[in-house]
Image (cartoon, rainbow, N blue to C red; front, side):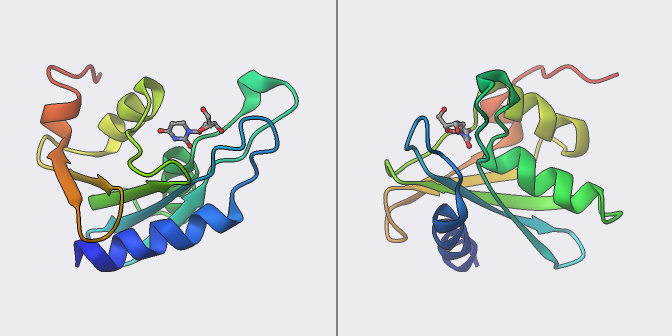
Length: 125
Ligand code: THU
């Protein structure tokens, strides 16, 4: 299941719009209802407007009415890809401590972490 999700994340690196960093990122987010929402990073000439692959996937899901998630796989043109701080906080909004984050250099060397591990004592109102 993790491998399949990771493969979708790898596929999504092809959709990345990264003319500035050339760092292509793809994400595949599995919702609790079994649906998968994909995303890629979308950069902008005004650099602060750039959106990461993970947040693209979350925004696609939430805007379709889906707010409960099981796991996310992330891949990049540089191999392993760890969510940035903003994405960790963004995930925390919708995900409990046991939400799973999967990444790796390839599908045979995947590493998995939990939300609690990558954002301990995370803030949420
Ligand atoms: N990026 C992501 O898409 N996800 C991350 O978790 C880290 C960074 C993107 C943003 C930008 O387009 C590029 O990678 C370089 O920072």
